[in-house]
Image (cartoon, rainbow, N blue to C red):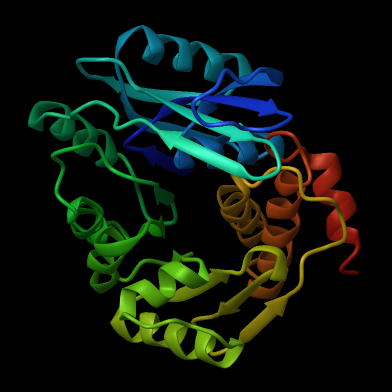
Length: 300
C-alpha cells in the first residue's frame, strides 16, 4: 500500500484575474476551491491513475471538515488526525504571472504526533510512504528523519519531497527517492547551479549523503534523474501549453510511483512521472489519466 502524509494540509483558493493591481480592488474571471497539500495531491493523482493510497495527516476546524468531505467525494481513503484550530487557506492568484499566499497552518501537539506514529506502525515491508511538503509551526525540522528512523526496520520505500533542512536531515535515513528542483538542490550545497553537468554532480552528492535515487525537476526544461544503479536519465517535457504549475511536482511523484510499482523500471517510471507532471501543468488542476496516456505516448 502507498501512504502519503500531509503535515500541513490546506484549502487552495485559486483565482484568475485579467491583471493584479496592488492597493486596488481586483475582480476575478475564474475561481476554484480544491483540496491542498503536497501529499494530498499525490494521493489524488494516484487515484486518477487507478492506484489506491491512504492519505494521512492532521486536520482541524470547519476547514478541516470541508477538506475531508472534498477528499471523500474523490473516493480517496483518508485517516486524518484531528487537531485544534483550522487548517490553512492557500491563495493562488493567476494572471500574467502566478502569485501564492500560503497560510501557516495549525500547530500539532505531541499527542497528535504520537497518534500518527502509532498509525505508521501498521506499515510493512514493500509499502510506500510519501513525506511531502512543509511542516506546521513549532515542529522540528528532523520530523521526517525521525519517522524514517522508526520505520527503518520495516524496509518501507520512502519518498521525500521537501526543502532545506527538512530534506537534508532525512538523507542519512536513505530515502528511496528525493525530488528537489534545481534551485533547491543548489541551496542545499550553497551554490548556484547553471549546467546539467552540475545538476548531475550535486544529485550524486545527495546520493553520497544517503538518497538512493534523485530526480531534479527543471521546470519547462523537464527533469533529470540519477538512479541507484548509476543511470543518468534526462527527459524534456512533452509538447503542450502550460496553464498551471501547482501540483506538477506532486504529480510527477505519483506518476513515478505508479509506474515503478508496475514495472520496477527506473526509465519507464521516470518517463511516466514526466508525463504526469506535465499533464497537471497543462490542466486547470491535477492530471487526469487520459491526458497522461496521451503525453506518455509522445515518448514512444
